Each structure stands twice: as structure tokens, then as C-alpha cells.
Length: 110
Length: 304
Image 1 (cartoon, one colour):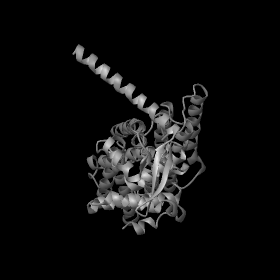
Image 2: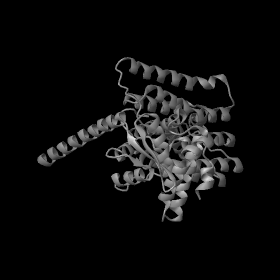
Image 3: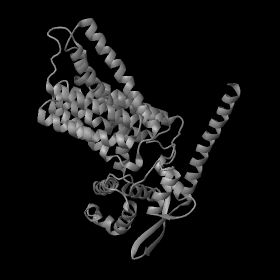
Image 4: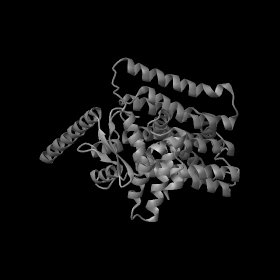
């Protein structure tokens, strides 16, 4: 519903693709690692999200290859996806900076 | 294991992504236990069915269900709270011959407790677990209403079946990758409490002052769709005010109203006056939302 912030599963998925193109299973592993095991994206959920992000132009199919006789696509961020992720990362970082600043202020006065 | 599940996908999608999805599934369940395999397969089946029904998150219908789901949960939480409140009032009432709750009432007390617990878990805690628990409880509730022939405080089983099935459909239709964020859930939860608390206090006051068994609480519970519409209107306005899409908030509100309007119509039988409260709520909310849009445009492109 909210357009203002990127929802967490989307944020994790975009983050998983920020440094390199990845295939489906690698994305699942990255999401789990980035979230420190808190979020486990299942196969159906992952492909639902990939379809949506492809439709929104935030990611693209980077490569379609056949590995060991099996089809494998790798996905990558588009320019738009990179911009959205950068904006969201900056927003989160600004909030974190402010939280740390206020905590320090609280520590001084306490 | 995947073959029967993969057959659930539309043929065109399966031809394009089937091998890739099957491979990712195989890697995901490699070395996993039976429970983990079952969960993975269930998630895959749910995605396949969403693709077939055109309610995946890349479709407008999927996004609409995702937006409406927290509102539906909020209305159900308030409804369950009122049902439990009413059952407790009957139980604790010492006037006359004392409490006269039957076995079916106790069964439904359990059902409404489960609905309330699952709804609170979904809104205030873990959305995925709460949503699925609530959907399952609603299906059980519909089955019980149909078999026992009771439907909550007014004893209208058909109406309860309609409410439960439509609400469960919206919850199940919500794509898992578009779980409502914490802010939206908090707004919906707050709206439910804001309506439930004064309504319950009003019922207590009515009982205390007028000593009436079938007083205003029953009228408020079933004869009026005013309070669910108020929850929906407050939620939609608050979500849009916080930067959400006004159009999506309004559409979510109308979608979330369908189960309660159908419930109300099933209880009282349709009459034209029945549509007045929802229609006025929708128009008022639309006016507020679009007035907000016409002054400062704070919306940004859809992201999800």
C-alpha cells in the first residue's frame, strides 16, 4: 500500500542483486544471509517477487544459460532499480544516523 | 515431488520458467526435512494458483488484495472482540436465571478467541503466520457455522459463512512478497481498537443503565455496518495521509468492505437503506483522500 518506502522483501531482494547478477537460488541464499537468517524467501514467493520487479523495471534478466542441461536465468538490477535501492538505502541510513545521534545525546544527559 | 505442483502453473508460464523454478526448488529442499519440503511445496503451489487466478503481485488484483488484507484483518479483530465481549456479557450476567450459554456458544467462543489471537498476531506481530492462521480459523469457522447451524451472537450461520469465506479469500489472495508493512498494520490495528473500545464501553453502559439483554449491543453488532466502515475509512485515510496512494487506499477500503457488507445483507436481507452507510463512508473517504491529493502531491512512483 505504501509507495513511500520499499517493503522489506523487495529491499532484501534488490540488495541481493546490488553487487552482482545472481540466479534464483543464489538470490534466496543472499536474502537469508543479508537478513541474518531472519527472512527465508521460498521458491514461489521469490518468483512472484521477481515477476513483479521485472514488470516494474527494477530488475532485468541478465543472462539465460543452460547449465548441466538445466535452464538458468541470472537477474540484475536495472538503472531504475539501482536508483530506487540507493534512495532507500540513504533513507534508512539517515534514520539510523539520527537514531545513533539521539542515543548518544541520551547517554550524555543520563 | 515438484511435478504435480508444477502442473498447477499455467502452461505458458511453465514452459518459460518451469525448469528454472523446479531447479531452484530442488536446491532449496536439498537435505531439508519433511516439514521444510512441505512448506516449500505449499509456497510453490500457492504461487502457481496465484498465476492461474491472476492475483500474483505483478497483477493489479494481487496488489489490491495485498492492500485490502490488513483492513480485513482489522475488521475481523474488532468483530471477534465484540462477539467475545457479548458472550462474556451473557456469561457474567447474573440477572434472571443466570447464564444460558449452550455447547455451540462455547465452540464459537473458542473460534472467536482464535480469530482474535490470529488477527492480533498478524497486525502486531508476524504477518505471514498470523495471516495463514487467520485464514485457517476462518475456514473452520465457516464449516462450523454450516454444520452446527449457528452464526455468532445473532445466530445467522449463512451470514457467518459469507463473512468467513470472503475474508479468507482476500487474506489468501494477498501475495506473500507484498506483505503489508508495519506502518499500515499499525494503522489498521489502531483503527480497530479505536472503534472496538468505545463500542464495548457503550454496550457496558447500556447494560448497566437499562438492564437490557437485547439492547444496543446487538443492534450495533449486526444491524449496522457502520462500525466496520468506520474502521476502514479511518485506516484508508491514515494510510493515504502517511504518503500511500490515495487511489489504492480507496480501492482497498471498498474491497475490504465487501465481506462485511455481504455479511450484513445476509443477516438482515437486502434493503436499499443498507447501502447508505458504506456508500457515505466511501464517498466521504474519497473526498478526504482526493482533497489531500489536490493540495500537496506527496505520492511517488509505485515501488512495492
